[in-house]
Amino acid sequence: MFSEIEKAFYIAKKDLKEYYMKPGTISWGLIFPFVFSLAFMIRRGGMSVWLAPGMISLALFFGSTSMSAMAIVFERRIDSFERLLLFPISYVCIALGKSLSSFVLGIIALIPVLILAEIFTSTPPLNPLLLVVCVLLATFTSSTFGVLLSFLIKDPSQTMTIFNIVRFPMMFLSNVIISVNTFPQILKIISLLMPLTYITEAIRYSYSGIYDIIPPYMSLSVTAILGILFLYLSSLVIKRNIP
Amino acid sequence: MLNLYFRGDDVLENDNACVIVVEGLTKKYGDLVAVKEINFCVRQGEIFGFLGPNGAGKTSTVRMLCGLTKITSGKAKIYGYDVVRNHKNVKRIIGVVPESSNLYWDLTCLDNLLFCGEMFGVPREERLSRAIKLLKSFGLWDKRNVKFKNLSKGLKRRLTIAAALIHNPKILFMDEPTAGLDVFSKRMLWNKILKLKENGVTIFLTTHNVREAFEICDRIAIINKGRIVALGRPWELKRAFSPKGIVEAIFHPRNPKVEEISRLRGVIGVVEEKGLLKIITYDAVSVLEEIAKLAKSRRLDIYLLNVRGLDAEELFVKIVGGS
Image (cartoon, rainbow over all chains, first blue to last red):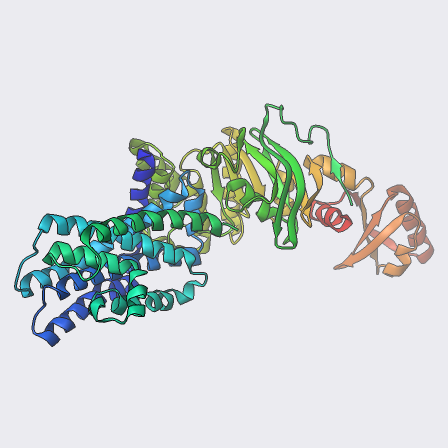
């Protein structure tokens, strides 16, 4: 068990060395969420306590998923992903290693947005400790979600297109920039099917003590369960992808 | 179909010398049967050549043994471990050189080896020394800080082989290891392979280079259309498949027509390559007599006359063609 976790860290370290500075990672993972947050802030003349958690969840979500999109899909395209299958490790270890590198990039992407939020919101986070827990949990779930999605993509050349087809609707439907309370019933239901909704709700509660439709105990536990579920599903998909 | 197996080459589960045992191994991709119920064993410390034309099932077999492809039916054991149920134990003791050099593009040579060492659980204090030793022994020390993507094709291949050796595997699978290598790199690699054999490493080698395989391998299996059509020591295969051999001849001032030669007693076939007549025969003595008669009647001199067995490539073509 310890050995598997150690090897997952080695995979993550290797991924970060290789893909941290790739254009796709930088543009979609780091620049986009920061610029998006900045644009909203300028447009509204500051960042409300309702919007700041949305921007934080958006940053960690784009940061972590961009890393997995880059690392996994690129390696599958050039066959070096097969190397991981030759090491004496489990499929869960591979999925965990890939998730950890995405996790680190998610956290890195989050920092500038967090600083913006800290500077430009009128009130500081309500519960900083809970915010840290929520952010770590949310980044982990975003990472495993990105890893799962990356392994599901058949054609690597379509990666960013498919990722954005999934991410952009989530951005609008997951309570990030528009409150789900304003949505018609059908969109509310769709929103509840999206992992980003639970992530945003959990962060929003820890940041400002408010939530829109999902109570904090539920958003936190669903976020945690989804993280583990996506990790497990990723390992199954890795196994299934073996010809 | 030629189905030639020599003594001791059947599957012997209880043969302690067998480190790879394959029984009824089959791989299907949809309706296509890539490998069909093959059986063989590989003994400890031998170089086992696995030859076949393109699409014969060589790579599918290697991939099944290494856990890169699912097995449709049959079973395979490596050092007693089932390759499916105990895949982690199997992977600890094997090294694999895949057909494509697929290390990590943006890592340096040294980092690639260190990463492989980490993943194979090489003790922390040994990783660097082993990586350095491999880099030096494969002539890559000067390139240790160069990224894998910036290496030439031959150097990429060398590093891929070095990476497969970082954990001192007991068995080394090499799928077309010399593909894309220049003559010097090829020679260096064959020397390395022989050195590994001296150190007790078992080598499972697939290659298109039939001549070299016949020189270097202890035993050879030839696979065609998913089936093993011949298996034995190189000299056994040669003896079994070319009992009479080839008569080579050059006449002066000119060779008789190929059609004329082909009508001679004992001749199976004739080809003329750059003025050299290659007469395939089941009865070399008769052919020699017939050639002497023909030369006398036509008042031709015999510039060259030579009898030999089939060379490795001709033998390979004969076995594969015959199957």
